[in-house]
Image (cartoon, rainbow, N blue to C red; front, side, top):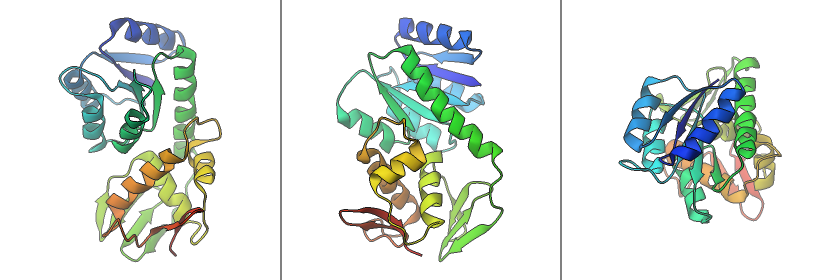
Length: 227
């Protein structure tokens, strides 16, 4: 497993790198946003640990630009306990977040959970069927989505949410249901994580995100796919 660590605090990078290399990970490091973006585009990483507060480009800017071309899992590192940082990280396409100060064991546990799900998705044979619902086409085998024949660049979690809802049309899932099924029971986030991903998903697949055709809201209950 190849990991990119991005943080301008070199002691933090050194500590995480040493611990990961002891576990057999291949690790590369960057200390500013521009260097991080260059390495992310050139390297084939399995996961990226990305600090929000960086010189040259912020972690949010780096995350957003990576998401234009790649679905590599990204864990945001933030020194603030402010919920807005966490929500913004998810809004820009991150898969998870960890607030500083953190224990390196927590970092590794979060990484392993994401990598485990990622490996499972690659190893478990998907149904070869391509689902077509109106203007939406969902290629489950290759994990790709299209609107009016144009491919939509979904993150891994956005695709997971869409696939779950689309394969169970008209079934309403609460935010807790979606957290458990898509992120896993060990994930420490809350319903806002789901809301952010659904909003981003709608912005990508709906012609009018404010009046969605596919991913609908059952007020006070949760979300469902209009079959």
